[in-house]
Image (tube, rainbow over all chains, first blue to last red; front, side):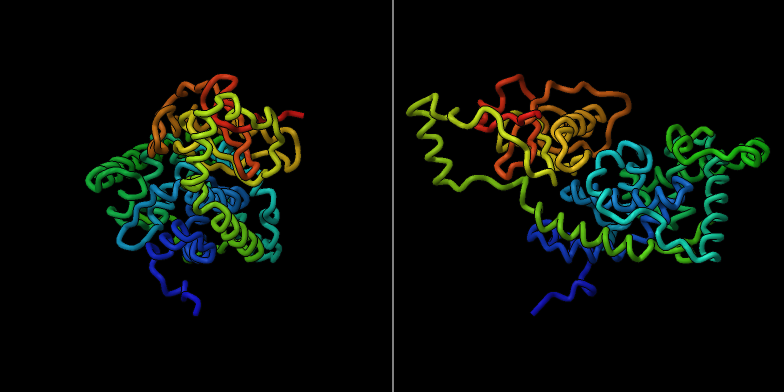
Length: 208
Length: 168
């Protein structure tokens, strides 16, 4: 009798995949978390197409680093978003590293052909790029804590797992990041209204 | 203060999702146990006896061989077949001679990032800032015909009983 992967915990799925080579178990983990990882990659890049590639990269990286996984409760999501932070920080290198496997996937955006959906995606890209531009003056760690807590909706404890820091550090870093963002708001309004920075530039240094 | 609501965002396109899932499942099936795989004890003992009995015989493997398994490569952190290895999906065009070069460069990237460190049997969890030193790397052909990148001088592959990767 087959295993009911859909009702298994993240830890069980990870264990079956890593110890027994159960591909379906890792497939189920992908199914469970791909959309959140996709959304997070989008929030860090402002590009849907790059987010699609990076989503695959995150899971390939997660598999490569499978022995380092940390769970928050039973969820692997916070750790996966931490992997996503690394992947988006070094997006070009991450994509190059997994180029061969990515080449086998369908090209990004193949289904974004419904007009209403396409318009929404373009609007969201603009909004994300504007926000990324506004956050450009923040330190990398401040950008990441905002993305994890305010965009992806992780709790302090989950963000701590994602960032590999104590929960108290997340709280103080988030407080400072929000304050810093408010301080920068006036200056960034004019700058970001005109600028249309490319995701690559935003990723490269975070300073548009 | 929440700007984005993932639950309201478009989801990963279906075709892309299916393909990525299938690819991951295949990768897991192929590689789950790969880093820990060791030769059976009897075979290892025979190899050891041959090596002790006739030193040169241990190096009687082909000097060079092509890398025909392009799916994966391994970056070792020590010049030892049983040492720690990080698996990578090799970048490059399948079937091209650039494959070996890319395995070398990709492992070099991992060292440069600080993710791998020579002599350390684990991937570094938090890459340090700034470029880290990259040891001299050689590309050998692993038992499954994939590229195995080791730190060490020329001749490391022969010393490990592995063919060096042939470049066309």
